[in-house]
Image (cartoon, rainbow, N blue to C red; front, side, top):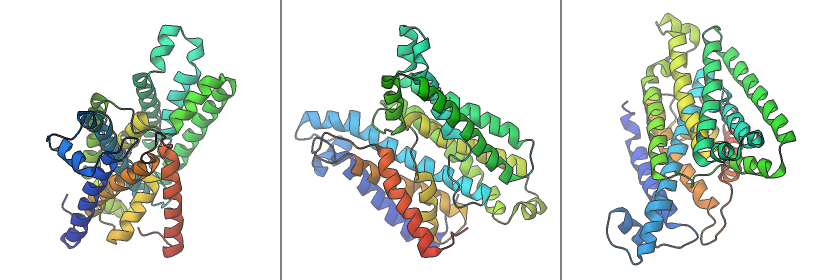
Length: 343
């Protein structure tokens, strides 16, 4: 994957912005830590207070890395879906992957009343919710893959994915209706999304899954560029549509599914970031778009997390609310400014 050299200066610029946002994000929080001490702690030097180093290494650094993984993963998966379906409103969750994860979590939380105390305590634990969300997203992804093997029309897959999402949402609504208030509240809190609840072991697992998804996306660069010409023309060039579609869907499933499982359903990042990237780089070449989306998605997610933290305050706003408040106006502004999305 070699980006266009003419964009070298832009890549250098946004990489520097990413580093600055990363340091600022770690510096902010309920406990103010000067950015100089933050930088010293990251490179292993001594800091003024030992407690600051503990906060940075065990709490803020994993959260900042999680923000980067989520932002880059959702951005790339949104780009893949928009290219596959040639639809500017397609996002990483159009296949129902997020709805499947939500169903898995809803069954664990809202259905825990029917299990024993020991079993229910594990089911609603952090690992239980991660496993439940993963299984739910995998189930929906598997069903979409089965359907995609039977149909030739890519748009039919989009519609089927939306229908799977509607079915899972309906099941969640039924479970919510009969659930006690405290279980419903726990499920709602999960739906807000969170970047700060992962340990280092969970961050490494999340990173490994996301890297695999990014690698598959890189392998799909040539098919993605060919699909921009239209499926019929792509077939005439020798592209195997079904194999390419499988590769793109699996990459999206890994990136979007893992993000939902580990951080909850994060809205608008996957929809807005690819459009912002196209406006900045003025290209449809995925050799440039994929690394650019990784960088811009990471920057935007770090900025959203910094805003959500309410610096110097003990309160933290739901990250899902912040991404929606920022992402929705961005998409509206792009539509008004360009009137037509670039593809």
